[in-house]
Image (tube, rainbow, N blue to C red; front, side, top):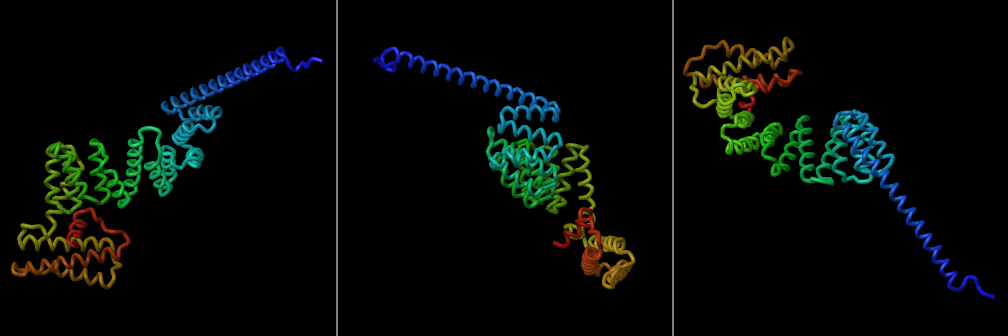
Length: 366
């Protein structure tokens, strides 16, 4: 009996079956891939539409388009990042935080996701957490232009610290970035050093600008601010005068110049003034500190403060000969400083430290 599973006819049939299966499998795979490619292309189109809507400011519609794209291609990190940005722009901070949390759980080093999370947390007033995420953005991974994006993230952190007057942290960030500052941001860096309480570094920055542009009025005014913050009022006055000569409409420089003039005419320690002028200024300081203290304390002065006020009243009425002026000047300055300290201790509201009297008293205390 002939075995039907043997012989040439069987082998040919078996081969044809295998070929048919292979053809069908290839066709199915091709169709599946084509369908997948078409779906991905549709998701990409929806994503692009979402981007265009965001650029026009229509963030609500942008969110819908990007979510539709994610329904097709779940987990696409580019889509999720853009969704979080659209949610944040639309004011949906809790939704944005949820989206970003999903991204950062799978990749904590995602630079863009960390940056947007920092912005979300700033909006929510959670500044300590925001600073942490901005640091992550600075040292995180970026798909393109990593150096540029990290620098921009650092400047975003710097602006946040400047706005919150976090001087020590701000100074640390400024020092870290000082070798990577574009020339067009040098003036900003000088101003930020002033905010960070480092006028010496600010002065160095502004002098560097002036080496290339000696008549840059903004840089000259910035140098004036730096010298003012260092207590070099004569130098500051000179710089503000120069800045106003070049830019007469600079009201900030004019106000600073007026303040310099007031300090320079009140300060009894200025070089070049004689004993008579020094005595006159010491009496003026006593008058001003008496006025400050009386206005603040009113009728509730302690016995100690009242004693100082009585002593000041006698000093202001006393007749002082030319021979006695030097000794009287020293006595007046001591009395003015005692009254100033008493005013600080006994008044609820702190004294103005940025006015002529406060600046001169701070200079005397050095």
